[in-house]
Image (cartoon, rainbow, N blue to C red; front, side, top):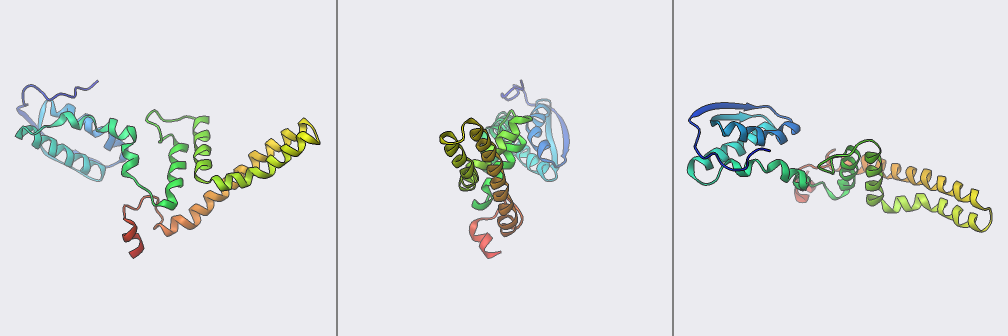
Length: 206
């Protein structure tokens, strides 16, 4: 486990750091830079994209260490903060595309710090779709539910099995239809992005 305390003695050696872009790299950089800072003073630091953001925070941490206003101890906690939902709070989708983001995060395992694998991702994506499109899910499942109810009274247990299969197939078809509507209508209206970074007023002006 990396230390979250400042070095007892400020390093005398110096180094320059250039950081490349990439979301995954941006998550790794805080602890990597803290480890470097324990041995070196970061003199020249820069980067591109996510690397530029990490470089800016590292420069502030180095300045804080030199001026006695804090330093790299808080810098190391950034990955935990992002893993506990901080990244999700930073990327706020438009209302119509919020369900798309939830489904994508659940289907890829990105909605949990420990991720998901295999069947867990499928189940998570379906659960997120049902939560996001409840009326579509209900409309798709209703015919099968009617078959089950009538089957219990008239046709016996085989009707229940048939009704359950019908619920699954029609419910899945309804959810896919909802996703396609979301993708074909709402995504283009949102500048073909889920999170545009624009306020609602800025989106209207565009």
